[in-house]
Length: 92
Image (tube, rainbow, N blue to C red):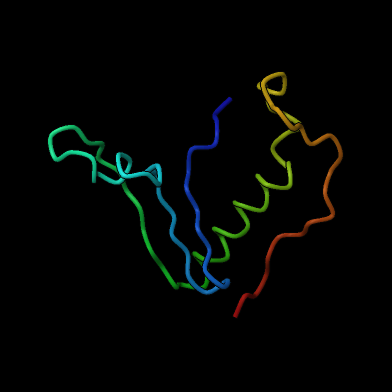
């Protein structure tokens, strides 16, 4: 089962950063020019992409992925019950 590694930052439901880099100096290449990872990310204010990012974050945060997760025994704070959280629609 895959683990969450994406990074999503939502700014006022208007702009989103979606990427893979750890948000540390080493993760974004500031530690050394000789030893760094190559990462990808986007900063967008496209309403469809912002909505998709919000929904992805919310589905993981609310535990929608927990039911079928094969790593439950490693989860420090498992989500047992479902959530009343609904997908975000029409941000703008």
